[in-house]
Every structure is written in C-alpha cells, then in structure tokens.
Image 1 (spheres, one colour):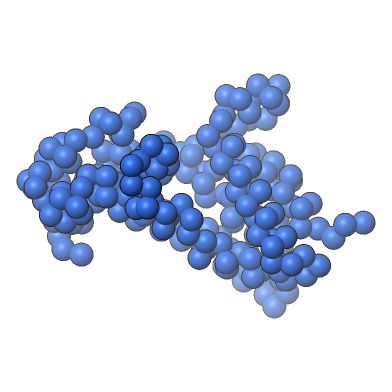
Image 2 (image 1 turned 90 degrees about the vertical axis):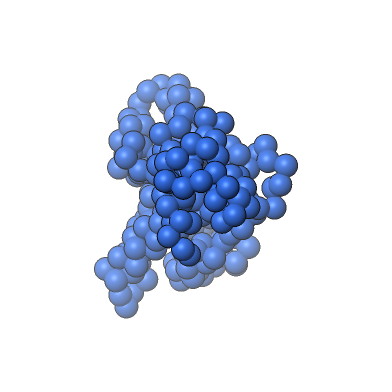
Length: 208
C-alpha cells in the first residue's frame, strides 16, 4: 500500500472518530485532511464508500488482534490444561465492550460502518467484514475442548448468541439501564463484561 493510500486511511479514521454522522464526511474533506486531492480517493479506493469500508476493515483487524491476544493469554495461563471458560468468553466479547465505552478508541469507525452497511446500495462490499468468521474459529477450537458434548453447530450457535448479547449491550445502553432498573453500571466495562460472561458461560456447561 502506497503512502497516499495510508494517509487517506488515517484521515478517514480520524474523521470518522470525530463525526456524529457519516454523512458529515465528504471526499473533499477527506482529501484535505490527508493532504491530497479529491481525485485520489477514487483513484486509490474507487469511491468514498469503499475508502470507509477499507478503514473499518483496518480497525476491525486491530479489534480482532486484541481478542486474539486475550485468548492467547488465557491459553498460556493454563497450558497444558484447557483455558478457563470464563476467560475465553471474556476474550471474545470484552474488547468490543471496552472499545464502545472508551471515547479514545476507534469504536465509532465500526459503528458508522454498521450504519452504512444497512443502507448501502452495494452490500457486497461489506460482506467480507460482516460475515467473516476466521478469527472466531480460534475460539471454537478451545470451546470444543471445554464443551466436548456439544457439536460444532451447537458451539457456533452459542457463540452467535454471545455476540448478539454483546451487540445489544454495546448499542442499547439506555434500554439496558431501564430494563435492569439501573442496577448495573453500564459505564463500567469490567462489570458489563462480567455480567455477559455470567449469562453466556452456562450455555457451554454440561447439562445436569
């Protein structure tokens, strides 16, 4: 990737983190922030939309790397025994929760990406990120060890449910506060992660 492409990605990431709405971005503003010309956006990425998708993909790789780091730490902690179930689940859902509550994170980039994907006329360019499961497969391998009575479909379904809970928690804070009678501090990532783990872990335990 050449220097201009990187500058455009960096500029797009900064502007998305600052923007309340993705519609606030324009090709001219992106080019000015990157110190290049508006035509360079289409030259290097094809369109502003594809530049935003490429930016989100780069941010998503960082998020997934954080997940993998936490998973590897949990594995090494217990090696050669299987890792703790709760730590595997926390590694899967925790980074998203922490990013969503950290104003200095790049979570807004992913939030804008999700909003764009729902209204785009070209949904195919979002598919690789939205439907990508490669990084989840590493978690599945350890969950198989921890719950050998479950087949792959059952493990995959439970992972999908766990990620769904995480998404609802990160996107619907006000509703969650009302539903829980404000008994949970949804501004505290440690508490939120612990509460999610508390609900998800029994899905992977052997039935009585």
